Length: 259
Ligand SMILES: [Zn+2]
Image (cartoon, rainbow, N blue to C red):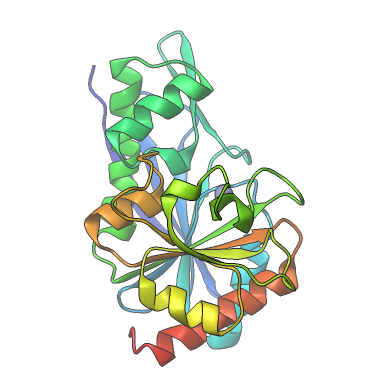
């Protein structure tokens, strides 16, 4: 079976605020089309903000506001169904994957098995989808800044990475500020980022790039390739917190002379 992709760049709107560019990536075989859309105030060389989970809806309003105020930066977002997972049809079968688990072959197999079922044709499609994204937006960067939302008191929080937490083995170091909401935290792959954000009093964990579970997520992919990566994980609806965290990253870029 031939699996291919077409890429088209369209500038949709120009206004005083960040411009929306649609980089439409469609496959010959599968529906629905997954689009990668960029919101750009102004391109920032070597730096990209990333929003992968479409149902995490606090991210984009916050990012648009901050990028507009700075008049700098771009965020790329995945657009398909409004859901977290990407579902697609191949032949008579429908498959589903978590799009933040598709950046290594091991992750692709695991997420197909967890969300639907694995076969080689579906894996080829998903691997190509991940490569289309990383080739276009990630591989040439010197700093990747992801943004996610989680749920209040849900499964994932800063304590998940502390001693006794379910992801303890993924972390090389953890700092917890008891005054902060445990759902609002940074996930970083670079010890310079860890030290800076800890100094600022934010909850932060440092990924152990050697021992981290190969789940196919973007943090693992960037860790393996040595691309500095940071994720702002904030509770859904925590607009002010996620904004404050984004602005701290902007400060960090200046303080650490990352640009
Ligand atoms: Zn997410």
